[in-house]
Length: 356
Length: 283
Image (cartoon, rainbow over the protein chains, first blue to last red):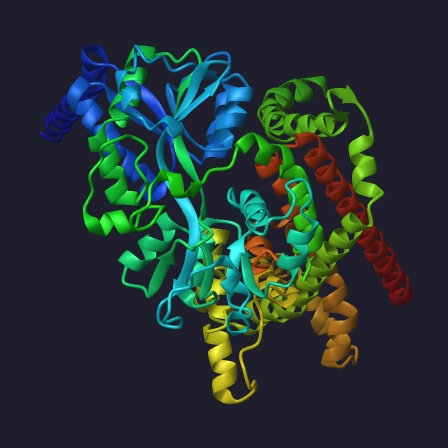
C-alpha cells in the first residue's frame, strides 16, 4: 500500500517535472526558432524603462524581434564593446556624447548606412555625427545642464549663471564635479561664457574658487538628493533630473539662463560586426520615428533629435531648451576638444577646488 | 607523503584557479599597464605620482581619515565586543545583537552613505537635534569635512572589528582569568595583563581589516566629501572611469597598495614587538 502510493507519487512527480521541463524547453525554443533577438545596451533606471517603452516595444511589435537589454552606463558599455571587439554580442549601443567619440576612435562602431536606416532623413542635421565621411552615431535626444533652484526658498527665478555667486546663496550651491560627465564641459562652458581664452582656464578656476558651494555632485542622483534634502537650494542640474523631482511634487524649478545651457545627447550606435545587423538597423530606424521621440520627450524630457515631433505644452516647457527654444539654443561643445582637455581640467580641478 | 600530495592537488586546483583568475591576473594587468606610458615601457607614471607634493598631500589625508576611522572603530568596537561576549548572558539576546550588528552589511554602501548624507546635512536630523537641544547655535557643517567621512566609515566598518575582537574574546579560557583573580589581581589588572594581551591578535586583525578597507573606500568618501575632499581611491577612480588613463591610474593604484602594505607591515611589526615585550615582562 505505502509502496504503491510512494511509487505513484514518484511517477506523478516525474511526470510533473517532465512537463515543466518540456514547457521550459518549448518556451525557450519557440521564440528562438520563430523569431530573432537583438541585444541593445542602454542605461539603468527610468532611462532604460523609457527606451524599452518608447523604442523596444514598438520595434518588437512591428518586427517580432525580441530586444534583450544590457543595462549599464555609457562608460561600462564602451568598456564592453572594447572587450568584445573580436566577437561582439551587442548589436546596438546607447552611449552619451563624449563616450560616443571615444568609441568611434576605438574602432568598435559600424557606419550607419542611410539605405538601411531610411529614417535618418528625418533626423536633425545636428544629430548626425560623422567621421571620415560616414555616420558613426545618431542622436536620440538632447538633455541640458541648466539652473535648478528651490522654488520655496527662491521666489524670483534666477536668470544668469552669475547669480550663483550672490551672497544669499553662500554654501547652498551645487555644481558638477569632473567625476560627472558634465563636469569638465561645464568648466569649459563657463570659460566661454566669461569670455576667457579657450586655452587658458586659470581665470575661470580663480572665479570658481570664490563660489561658496555646499557640494560638488559626482552623479545625477547625488544632485537630486542634494536638492531634495535642501542641502543645495540653487545650482546646476540636468533638466531630466530636475523635472523628475518637480514631477514628484518637490519645490524645484529649472531655468534656462540668458547665457544658455550646456547640453549633450544620448546617441545610438551600430556595433561593428553586430551579429544581427539588419534587425539592429531596423531598431535604430524605429528609434528615429517622431512617435519614439515624442514618447522619450514625454517620459524623460529629452529634446527630440528628429523633425516634426509634437508634444504637449507641459512637456515642451520642460525640454532642455526651455519654453520656445530649439536645438539652436543649446551650447553643444565639440567633444573632441573636451576629451583632449579632460585630463588637464580634472587635474586642475583636483588641485584648485577638491581640497577644502 | 606523495600520495597525500596527489590527493591534495586536485583539491587545491579550484582555489588556486580562482585566485589566479580573480586576483593574480587583474593585478598583473594593473601592474603592467602602470609600467607603460605612450605605448612604451616607462617609469614615467610613477615619477608623475611620486615627485608631486599634491599626491603626498592626498595620501596623507587618506591615511589620516583611515587612521581616525580605525581608532574610533577600536574604541567603540572593543567595549561592544566585550559586552556581547562577556556581559550578555542570554544566548538569544547575544544572537539578536550579532544579527543587528551584521544586518547593515547586507545593504549597499551607496544606500547607507546616502542615508548619512541625509542625516548629516544642513537640515538633517543630527543638526536639527544639536540645534534643538541647544548644543549648537546654527547647523554645523559635516558634509564636505573629514569628520563627516570618518562618521560614515566608522558606521560601515564597525562590525568588522567587533566580530574579530568578539571571536578572540570568546576563545579566551575564563579559567585563566579566574586564576589571575585567585592570585590576588584586581579585575583591572586581570584585564590588563591576561584578557587584553590574549585577545590582542584578534584586535590587531580587526584593526588591519578596518584600516585597509578605510584606505581603499571609494563610495563613502566620494558621497560624504561632497567633492570637496579628495582621497586616493577617488583619484584612481577618476583616471579609470572619466579620464581613461589606465597607465597613470595603474601607477596610482600600485602606489596606494604599496604604501598601505608598508603601513600595515609596520603596524604588525610594532604589534609583535609590543606583544613579545609584554610576554617577556610576564615571564
